Amino acid sequence: MSEITIFVEENGQRTPLTVPLGVNLSLMEVLKGYDYPIEAACGGMALCATCHIEILETSLESLKTATSDDELDMLDTLPVVMASSRLSCQIRISAQLDGLVLKLA
Image (cartoon, one colour):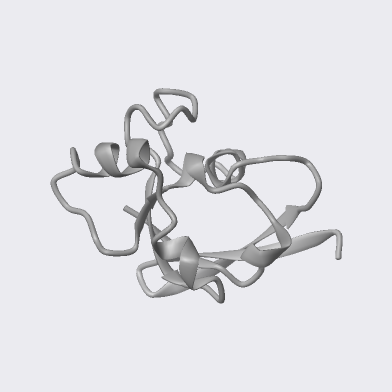
């Protein structure tokens, strides 16, 4: 497999994004590349929380909870956080993300 598909849900619609594998990108970089409104003010250092997403569906249940202390600290600064909230800058693209469904927060 040389690429995966990730879905972005907005207003009940799911848009598929084709993502190449083996290029060492973060999910934040992919979303910015597709022109989604991800500010990413800190450049992916988990220092600003402007790349906040919500994981809606994944075959990797650990993706919803596998957060570092730095990421948890940043998520705690947000006014609204869901149990499946993540910073997209902290998620590396891999084959296991195929079929991931997310929502921009």
